Length: 299
Image (cartoon, rainbow, N blue to C red; front, top):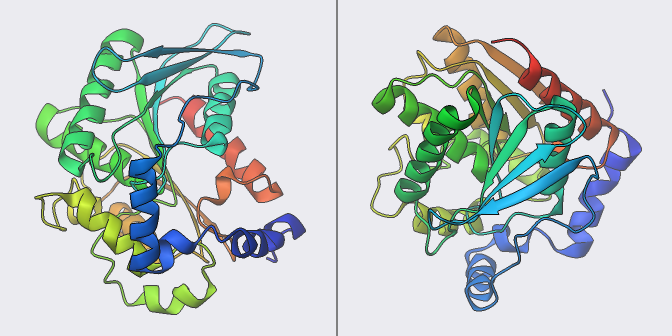
């Protein structure tokens, strides 16, 4: 199926705005990283967000942790949403819009950790922090889902694995939007997709990964969740576009998990880009409806 006109326009916008510069070369990645250290990006929610949610923030554990709550109806349960950005980029307005949409439409609280980014944040520290957050939220809200996009998808799935393996906790559903699941980036299919991916690039991403993994090897599940045995994970909902270099590994994750008996709900966006569910396109709106549906479905 041919993408909608808005989806077909997105690659040109990315190229004009040079949004891919940080990913396509090590030099561009280092320049972006240096600038983020010198000029940290803002992370707070936009002043103009949906009127039917309220927002609170708590920094008592060392990170700002926002909670978005619907006001039109009594909330039930909780979703911990981990934003993407290549482990170096801060949360942006598109993430906040999705978070508010989930809170209001799914009638649930959404918790958003503002985790430390590279070069200060590392996989072991951040995944452990998200695991602790989920465990606290289970006491506070009851049922807790996990969700994340791109780098945040990696963190969310890694946290689900640690919760299963260390704490005997099965996350009732984990929603993954274009997750980066194998940080070795050695899948040969990446070479085939790279020429048609206008956004991500292997060379720049590898520099961020080298900082992110810290002392951990690339095949540690806290870095590359695809390295873990998927058996025993709770249901997964996975979105990925075929014009995205993380697509081959995300598809491999889906196949491995399904073969291991995991309940997998897979949505492949033909000719769509990285994190397409966050974009203001018909395909993005349809994906967001699916996300709300899955987070409200009985577990």
